[in-house]
Length: 235
Picture 1: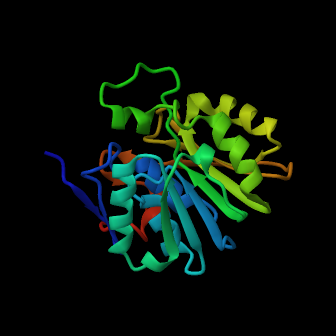
Picture 2: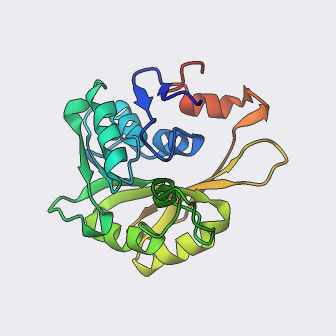
Picture 3: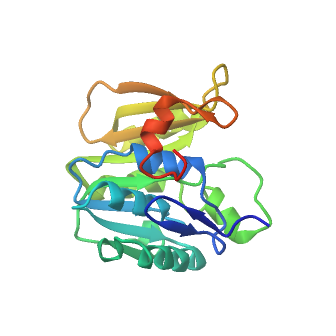
C-alpha cells in the first residue's frame, strides 16, 4: 500500500482521498511558476492543494483561490491547507471551473490540467476525471482564464510535450501568448516528456529554458535541486 501522505519541509500533503497523488509534475509547476508580484493567485484543479500550498509558501503576500471539481479531493485539499501555516491565505472552492464566476482578476493562474486527451477512459470515475480532459480541456482552460487574468498577469501550466502545439494554438485563439517555456528531461539522452509554459496577454519573445531532473537514478542535477530544495525534505 502506498504512503497516504507526502511530507514536505513546511507542510504535509495527505492524498489518500485523491485520485491523483503527489507527483513530480505538480512540484515542478509549484516551484517554477512566477510568484514575484502575484497577490491574487488562482489554482485550477487543485487536487490535494499541493500547488496552492507551494505558491503560498513562496509568496507571503499572496491570496490563493483553489478550485477543484471533485468533492473528495476538494475536502482533502481543505484538510491539507487547514494543517498548513498558510490556512488564512488559501480558499478552496468545490466547483466546475467553467461555471466559476468572480469579480476578481488574478495576477497568476496555474493549472496542472488533465492530459490524456485521446486515451481510453479509466474504469475508476474519480481517477478518470483527474486524468482526462473531458471535464477540463485546454479550450475551457484558456477561454475562461483569459477573462480572469490581469493585464500583466501570467497563466502557467505543465503539459505533456506532445500536446505543446495544441496548447499554444488554443491559447492564441484567446490572445494569450507564450512568454517563457521550460522543457523537462528526466535524464540526459531521453526525450522531453513535459513542458511548462507561461502565457500572457502581450506578444513577446519567448524565453526558452531546459531542465534535466536526474543524472542517473536518484542522483539529481544541481538545477533540479536548486528549483525544489525549499520543498523536498532531502534536497
